[in-house]
Image: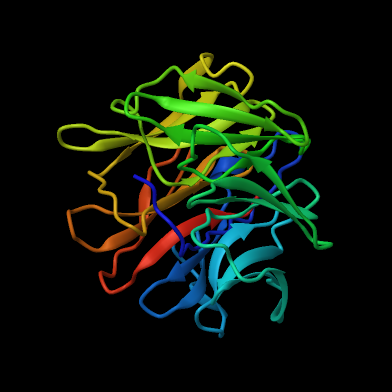
Length: 302
């Protein structure tokens, strides 16, 4: 079920309340998404209002969002570049040429390096530093199907591989061998992991899955202990969803706090892909219903 780049992003602007302020899951968040039909990036509020073009440049495919929420990793032809949302004309090249197929990008805490997985004959986990050097940290049995997820302190990364029977979590300690792998205690046939960006939070490793039903599906956020993948909260929170199909542009992204998600998915085989937003305690809702719009690979601002 692996999907490869291109990708796209959703940004969410979380309003932080003080004390007994509003639940951050209920905040209006800002979504940045890529339109495959136009090749442009658009901003949209999570309540469906205030859609506008994020940048006039065409062909910049966003594949990663910084922890600060102000920088994006883009594919620009055969190069991986970093761009600033506040300075749309400036791009710094991080990797050129790109070595074949790669995963979306995950920024390390502090945003001074990023992790990306290189597929192909010699699969490897690469750490790309803003200063220039590249570290290769992974040559293992399980090739991940999802992008890497940094631990909150940046010292480790989690890789998730979907096997024929289960999901395998591999934890990589930066600069330390060997790798540690453990099977998460849920079947991929019950909770089907979707392509997208998992989050490693202080509570544990969060990933979004789809549990299929006869008339409707359930989007379920699972909480996995990265130190012992057999310890799992089967459903951290869940939302009722229409019947969802998977195509090459399907993807989800979780917010940094794990309380909201956004994803692009068709609701009929070969049908138009729609953009959905949901938060804990809220209803899942479609943000874009125009069948001519092709949103893909959303990301959420921390």
